[in-house]
Image 1 (tube, protein in one colour):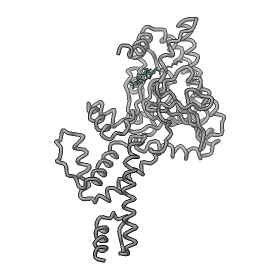
Image 2 (spheres, protein in one colour):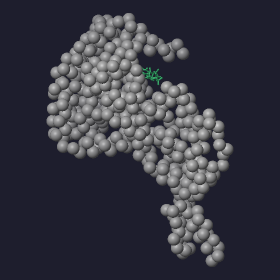
Image 3 (tube, rainbow, N blue to C red):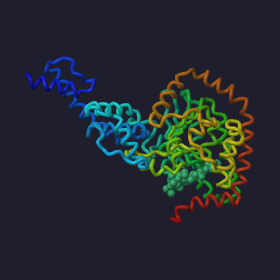
Image 4 (cartoon, rainbow, N blue to C red):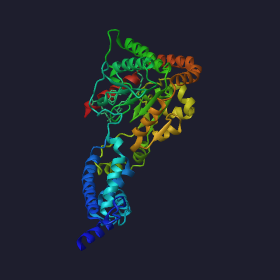
Length: 424
Ligand SMILES: CCCCCC/C=C/C(=O)SCCNC(=O)CCNC(=O)[C@H](O)C(C)(C)COP(=O)(O)OP(=O)(O)OC[C@H]1O[C@@H](n2cnc3c(N)ncnc32)[C@H](O)[C@@H]1OP(=O)(O)O
């Protein structure tokens, strides 16, 4: 009996409150010990789950996981405190040391609880495994699905950063036309892989038809005008889920969307790059062996490419963010973080990266439960005032671009891009 009591006292002292022994029946102690063995098993499963995380949970969560792991396996922090300039190890030490004398079992349970709270990013989110160019029926460059009242059009050229080639322009138009007529309530565009889209596929300028570059430029201008027109006239709420960097036309079109959601990784990683700390941030990321995802940035390098704005951005961007901010993006090619894009009105809302997909899709499913006719009619009330103007702007932008595509500035920029790797 004395041994059982001793076991009970030990169990009582080290049991996390969730397993607190309140009475002293041996069977209760046995059940709790089984629960603790289960939590050890859960702990090991959770460690494996962390390695399978599809979405980077963010540095704060990774520090918590590190600290709980150390506390659960080694007990209270037993490392000497790193120097102030050893940023990564100092952050880790602080996180572990903050747990004080938390018992190993409690740390283990907290670790399991934390990993299970990340479970949405363990499930397949809206992403298809990058690199697996899974084809939907009828599309080569997109994955189009329709469920929960949402038609999702996912750019699916992840190996080419979802660059939009001629085929993809046509497929996006076809998918939008089908979505405007199907029984879905809202339509969502997003990217598969680490990029939302790197914009126009620059090889679009290389397959020259018999009529020469003039015919190519004219054909591209006709295609672009029809493509942007589909976004101007799209009748349902159109929402962008910007899962990674967006470049060129994939950015300018956002001015024609009804909502744009992006994750906050931008502020963490792009700003650390700007402050020269990116090396530390990359090293820190790799110490958690979680696939580092590209931060969502918004870049319109038109001048660098010898080109000019499209997607009605020459009209929408000054209206959305002021002429000066539009100039910084469209003329000088300033790359924005999601936070900056949100501050300037191009992005509607920024979400924590660790919960981005879960929060956004929960919200979109709620939107899709709203009365469809009210949504369409409300969008029409807003869009009809601008529709004629937007089509006129689109026509003018395409005419200007048709000339730009024949310029030496554009030709040189495209050649430089396409030949850059051959120099390596
Ligand atoms: C009908 C015509 C309509 C025209 C409309 C007007 C539209 C204008 C625009 O959209 S302008 C903007 C065009 N886009 C760009 O200039 C981006 C070019 N790409 C890059 O700068 C880089 O690839 C990157 C910063 C997006 C990514 O860099 P990195 O992470 O180093 O990856 P890689 O460069 O190795 O890219 C992987 C792979 O993808 C190919 N690729 C990426 N983007 C494009 C692109 N826009 N066009 C063609 N190919 C692209 C890249 O070449 C690599 O291919 P490889 O692995 O070498 O085969």
